[in-house]
Amino acid sequence: MLILGIDTSCDDTSAAVVGDGSRIISNIVSSQEFIHKKYGGIVPELASRRHIEMIWPVVDEALKSAQTGLDGIVAVAVCHGPGLIGSLLVGCSFAKALCFSRDIPLVAVNHLEGHVFSCFLEERRPQFPFLSLIVSGGHTSLYRVEGFGGYRELGRTRDDAAGEAYDKVSKLLGLGYPGGPVIDKLAQDGDPGAVDFPRAYLPESLDFSFSGLKTAVVNYMRHGRQVPLNDFCASFQQAVVDVLVRKTEWAIRQTGIRTVTLAGGVAANSGLRERFRSMAEKGNVEIFAPSVRLCTDNAAMIAAAGYHRYLSRDFAGLDLNPAAYLPL
Ligand code: KG4
Ligand code: ZN
Image (cartoon, rainbow, N blue to C red; front, side, top):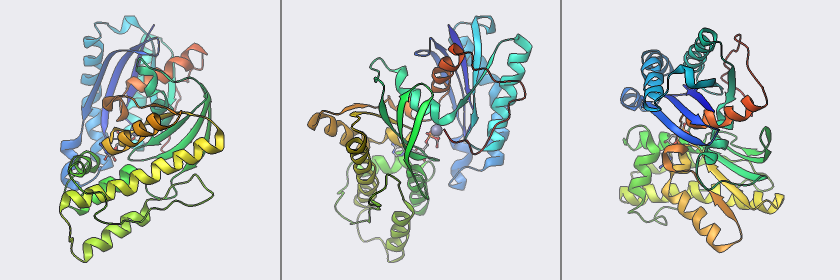
């Protein structure tokens, strides 16, 4: 059963064909990095214009490389939020028109639900219930996942998302956008103990906060960076990873759930993945981290989550409206 997934929530135009909610047949991502790089962050108006240009070619390529036409597709799953409203509108309008013209069902998928289900696209899959740490440019949250559609938020960031902190620090250092991959690479040859950046552990809470860390970086830079760039990046990364790991450990202790999945762009981070790997080796905790290309935004994860909604006949109407703010 083939589902066409579409994601235009932020700055990537993506379309994918997924079989039975788990088999990736095609997963095309057209990046807008080259457009936003010079601004040091995403310019929403430019993002939506580029989505308009790319949506047809990207969907076309997804269908062609899956060697199927629209006749082989049983439904279209589209991300309807959260995200940039202008960007979401492009994907939603396109999906609605496609469903109307082909008379096939439309399925609306929350972007975060897509991230949660990205790990079901790998061969090794978690069993319910599990904890899901979603860390991206727009979100940093911990969820308890009981089953499909059963999500409880245990904690979320009170200010910046982890990826946002990476991107802002990268801009400050003149390293460009997106900051995560560059800082991650530089950090690999650095000393994580070189600068003692603050960690906001927020006792008694599973919430996160990264704005203090960002301010500490700004203040440190104001006095002139005294350590090599690699050491600086490694120290920043260590501060972010320490918080993400410690909060997840607290959530494991509080809930007794020992299966943890990672998702979102920051889950591609080598330092974070390494720490979770060693957590799994040390204790009886099972960690599921999707491959790097499934951590960042992609439409295969939207199709994977959409499959379950399709099975329960949870269809959206052609009056579906996207929403910039859409809790899971
Ligand atoms: O999930 P995603 O593609 O889009 C959102 O839904 O936000 O995540 C993008 C974020 C960006 O902030 C980017 O800097 C960060 O993920 N990122 C990373 C890495 N790769 C991407 N952060 C840290 N280390 C990485 N290797
Ligand atoms: Zn995302």
